[in-house]
Length: 256
Image 1 (cartoon, helix red, strand yellow):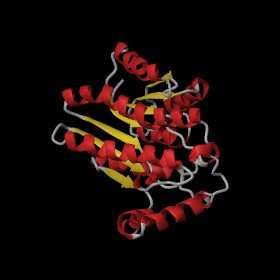
Image 2 (cartoon, one colour):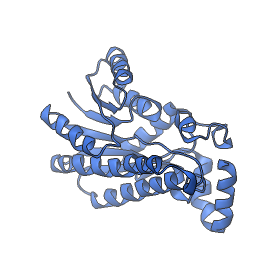
Image 3 (tube, one colour):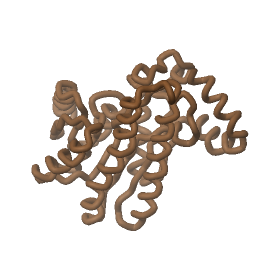
Image 4 (tube, helix red, strand yellow):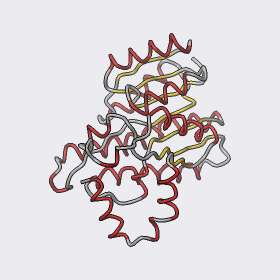
């Protein structure tokens, strides 16, 4: 296998689209998610369409031991991961005090700890080889507090900060880290998060367009890519100058 990209959360949404982006360039893949059947179906489709090698590793990355197990399985197969797509994650809407702790804990485990640990496991090899790319799927949610999705927004702020901090440390190493920051995307996220009726998702982007922008930014070694121009303008040029309570009230209204 060559030019291997490891994609977490690969069975659907942005992860599935990232797998297609990688495969259409003739690059091989390791697909990771919980659902083995969905991964096998995707793998066979990619093999037939793009003539690439695809390996499936079914793992629940909310389980702490699974990340080390994944890394050890890759090492045991003698495979070299040159592209790491940290995409797996989920959200959940509602009042923080009313949400089940098991849901919030799992969200933090997957959205933050899994991202950090997989970077910590795979980056040393990339640095030693003098080349490698990491694309962390974050969100425009990471640029502001998010009432009614307080923990999800906080996890994405972590991903944004971690991505940029590590990217700075790796300057000159031949390894880059990029944060992919989309707005609303037409995936299963809205249903999982309980936001299917929210105005946020009335004009959601496609996973394919989002993945294409993220892949291009990763190839260029950019620190981040905000995939919607309007949101980029608001985040960088407007929201910082709005009183924070007013901004949060607007976010709360939209998400309610």
